Image (cartoon, rainbow, N blue to C red; front, side):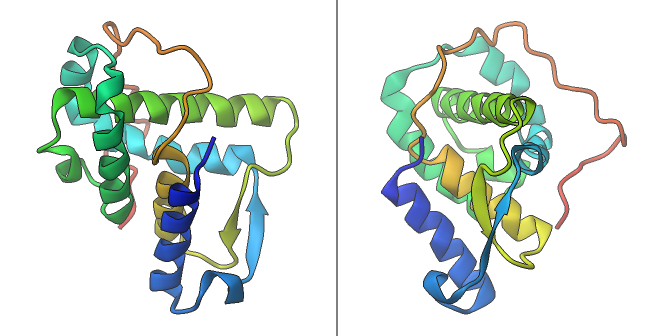
Amino acid sequence: MTTSRAKAAAEQIAEQALGAPAEALEWEPITPTELGELLWQLEDVFRPYFRIISACPYLPKSERAADDAALNLADAPRPETLFMLAAPTLRVLFERHRQMLTVAGLNSATGSESIMRMPVNAEPHLRLQIAIAFWLCEMTLPMPVSDQSQIEPPPDPRGSSSIRH
């Protein structure tokens, strides 16, 4: 599901943050549950755009723009990063996000022990950035596109943003 561009982008993020080439870093596996917890933070990023996303059909012609948007989001995982995106691009990016949450959940439920690798001792924010680049850039959807016309933002149990800066 990931591509060489996505993998290279994820490694570049790690290299820039940790100051060493990817091949010199020590990497450790993360579980599907850990990946799901990382990506769940993006619900807060997409929350201001749920009405726009729910009104827009999935348009495959917006996939390339979504690739670039995913890399921008990896650089700055905040709602403001998505502000200038066209609705179809937002829709594609959101679909990738939601499907990746499903994939992580299914892998967790089936007992998979590892879904990707992260640099050892990487801070949570860096892990989120790497996961976004690795999974949401050039993602091939593993399932049919879902109808988002009735989506509601999930409740935030803390009452505030879960993104940690």
